[in-house]
Image (cartoon, rainbow, N blue to C red):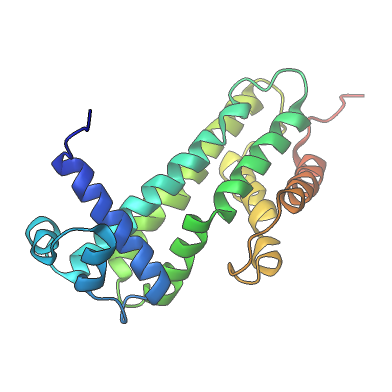
Length: 209
């Protein structure tokens, strides 16, 4: 038995089609007609539900960053209860964060933000708060709990989180050819392991002796 399409489903389909179109063609070269065809809806449906192309772009970008942020937040789960092996928990989290960073949607989102950030400066700020800043804040919270439990040695968890993310994502621009190359999982694993090696040199608990 078929399931009726709800207004929420249709809106989501339009936003996903819009993001694919903007990612493929860029903002300037995209048009609402093409997005309507991609979403398999009538062009007036888009105008009625989401307004003009600029509004559609903003809403599509916000929906995309919500998806990518949720994936990255889920990647922090191994640090909630890391067990006895801190290194393994950090490596697992690092690999999951890199998979989120390297996925097609995340790469497309960064390309669009780079290309259109000057045109939509307030959107850039909003997306950064909802995406990168939200993930960094959640990571700092995990590190604060680990520091209290003497699993990490730091009094500046915001800086520790920022540096951990930088160690992970720093090598990716070159390895991904500025986001145009899909990085194999074994490369992501190697980057995660190297990042954790360096991170623990700075933040592993010190032996009192």
